[in-house]
Amino acid sequence: MPYTEYLGWIAYFEKRPIDWRDDYRTYLLMSQQGLKKSPGEVFSSLKTVFAAQDGTNEDGSIRGDNLRNSSVFNLLKGAKFGDTPDFLFRKDDENKDGNA
Image (cartoon, rainbow, N blue to C red; front, side):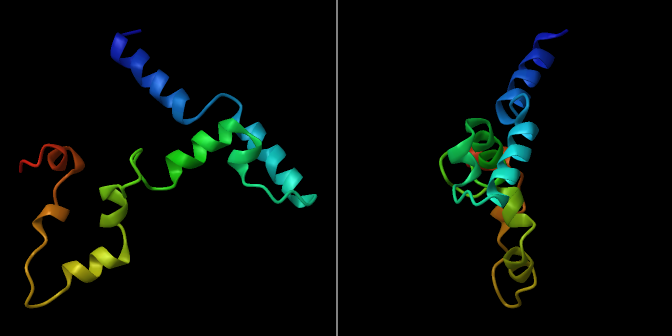
């Protein structure tokens, strides 16, 4: 296995821990029985899974892909007599350095 593939698997299992689906299934059963806690409070594996899916970066900022798929972005694209928000059309890799 190449080293890059190995790193990819490590990143995959950091975002999706082993047996997280079993933990989620158990959480759903517990919530049906009256549990009032969030999934991350009950199982640490679910905390990482739901943090990866909430659409924010590690620093709390919104990911660019989520903004591009939102209805607000469609309104910005359709605006008349306004400046074109060119920075929204760039990929996230281009925005990190601030260079186009």
